[in-house]
Length: 264
Image 1 (cartoon, rainbow, N blue to C red):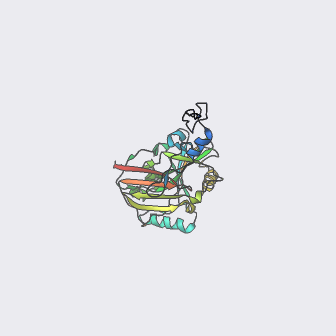
Image 2: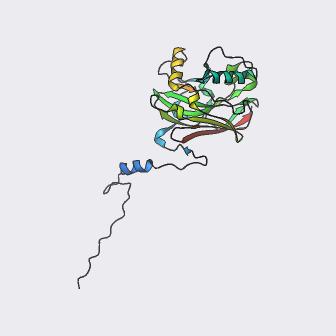
Image 3: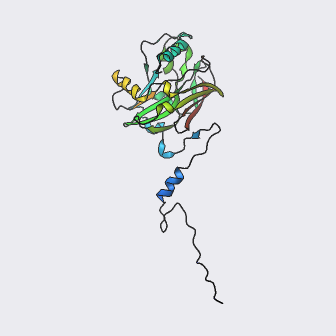
């Protein structure tokens, strides 16, 4: 009776490495990287793709970067008037032009989870645009403002407070990025405070065009621009301790930042 030959033992191969080498297999690695990321409880995928992210510290050189906050940035004139009315209710005079451009010190930018500010200050979620070395990036931040001082001088009220920003930014192409499909939101001490889509705000191309026309930013100059906010859900400012701002990208990924206020 013929004896059956035994098959040679096959060595286990790492599917992410090219056979016979120690080099990673780029096709399989890309496939693994394209697998869907885990979702959060609210159905948003956290931004985790390292190649799509950078940090605010990598992008901003305080010595060479212009920092601006845009006020009254809604596209719709009715929405702009609603925001003006909100501010008039607390004694803030109407703006001399729309949109308004407020120049900030880059030193006010902070990604710290704890910031010092007055008890009469509050934040507003805003998309934050960064132009660095001719490239554009998008993140989220808060235009924290002293509301008592705002009734006297809007610029001073903004300069009196830090400008919290999320540590993570995603690179975008101004010509192809779907700005209108993004949304932003804000929670104060766990309560919903703001929510809206970026289709209500001026586009990055429009904003940078206005800034260039007014001489606020030279073409190609490195800049950080807070791009405006969305209406308050209940129409009135609140003061709180814990602030969470978020920006959801067209693909469902979310960039968030939470900061706690400690009184001056």
